[in-house]
Length: 111
Length: 114
Image 1 (cartoon, chains in turn red, blue):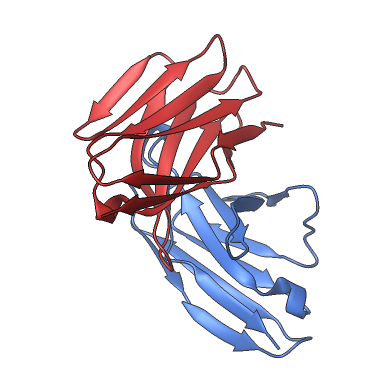
Image 2 (cartoon, helix red, strand yellow):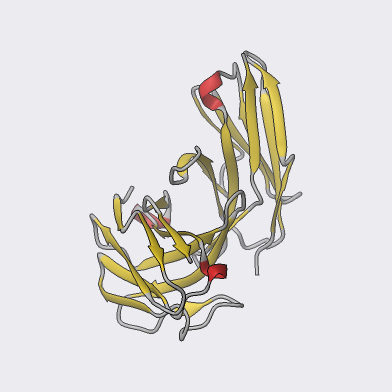
């Protein structure tokens, strides 16, 4: 099955700086890559996603890039704010429609 | 994206008993997924619930322990049977949106077994 690795496990950034989280996947058939933000005690919330026919996607301060050849994708958050503090999960979906999740990255934005 | 209502939000149960968790989706979806999330951990897929057929379970999860029902395209239940303290966790359901993208989650059920 699909195996998704995520790095780093924790990330502390100064408010206003950028944060980057990287994920790799193992199954070359994976074709959809969502990112989730989970605040303490809340459900995971989809923040951005990318399909395998696209290399980059932006939505205001967040962007995702995909390198199919290398089988890795990254989340970029610019101009970080305290409300960006949360756990972020990457995921990959193969042809069976199951999402495989990375281990998560705890992001702390220091004021 | 689908909006999913999940209940109960939390429960404290005695060991040896069973708890049934319900998820209602605001639109018809072919597949629903059940996850377990231990505190501070990632999401682990328990099973895929398809309407009109048996659920398919991931390695380490069995139907006798986690029976699933999927009576129609908008509803599913997960039962945690014969509970032990090791079953204490958060359980979440999920479903894809239009075209099989934009997966959303229920609000989760925080289960404590004493």
